[in-house]
Amino acid sequence: MTTGPPPNPSASRWRTRRVYLKRFEDSDVPFYLELCSSLDVGRRFRFGGAAVHPHAATAAVWDGALIHLVGVGARSRRRLGVVSVTSADLRNGTAYISAVSDLAFVGTGLMVEAAGLAIDYVFETWPFRKLYAEVPEFNLRSFGSVTQRLFRTEGRLADHVFMDGRYWDVHILAVDRETWDREGAPRLARLRPS
Image (tube, one colour):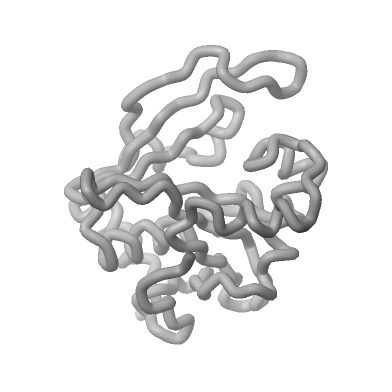
């Protein structure tokens, strides 16, 4: 279920020079499901490469979701990927954030910017004190130096997921509001249009 006012793509608050956020709509469901079930990206994300019936997959898109936001290329107007906030615990001020990128944009930093915009949006909209991300070890590279500056490791599940013929650890990372306000938001502000 999407709550709160949707980001307005023309508002500079929800865009950088290269990326903007748009509200996830029904027309984005096939794009999201394609990412989650593709042979390259999907096996590293939500369904772990398993075949999921379209009706079950569509229901799973919304299961536990607070909001989904679509990252869009500012020039190309092409969808880059989806950032999701799930498992919101308003009592304790926590939620989980995840992002899935079209393979064409992996390594470009565009989805990192979209995720930064989404984090900013979430901290502006809800009173969360901390956002968690569960990141398999094989996906840590996609975080780059952002992991060290903004996210801290709060836990590790040893040999938790199977990929490429072996088991990998899952790192439980967290970004808190104070760190975001001090480190993340100012970095994001430098990427916004002047």
